[in-house]
Image (cartoon, rainbow, N blue to C red; front, side, top):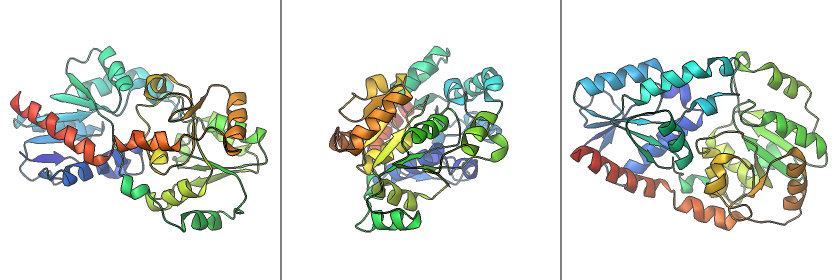
Length: 332
């Protein structure tokens, strides 16, 4: 049995969570000695498709016609498409129809959380849907004794500066607007946002928020994963104010880096995490402000429970679960 991890549209998503998911799948198969290829011209039995671009959809159809088994990854939902890019809300209904047509190509669908599984089942997709985390490569996020120093030197931060970071596209769904608003209420701390979005895709709301940001907010742009490890290890708090997720790979990265985490109390994290155990949760910006101060002052440390959570979702363990899914699919 040989697996193809289709990468025809990889360059379009390599700086996103989907790009990370594809890399995690490769590592998971490698660690579990599962025969795989990324060359679509090789022979294979089962294909992973992670993207919803026309090229990927077309390849999935072609694979089905050739008698291959197709695993379509459900990384996207209509719900997490909304409040993202310019015009996204107007197009969300069409987007939903499109992703349903993509996912229906799969013999099975894998989606990263029970929450996103429930959403896809609610769409009426009549395929077996598995909930399986995107996983995390724990070794990549260990950092070293100089991680904090490199990070602080690059961004001209003093050793005693209190630094709050977040990672994601520049969009309302990711909570950038509220991140900036909370930073305005806490001028004594530094806030840094890592991530890039094509300026043509930014909404007017987000453009205005960035334009009016206070001096204690740094828009750092995209950084590669090696540098991002330093950022996690060199800061004091990971602030994840997202309004909608199917999992949130950057959250797993923060857990793996053993940085304190404060998240928005949204539906997906209701059952996934217990407030005060793996994460601290907040709903309003005033709550975020008060809890940031408490966390920075040394209260509510959740890092060990959070690390325990990601250990169960290491790429090694995800690969073991994928192997079981392949066997079921091959025998279907």
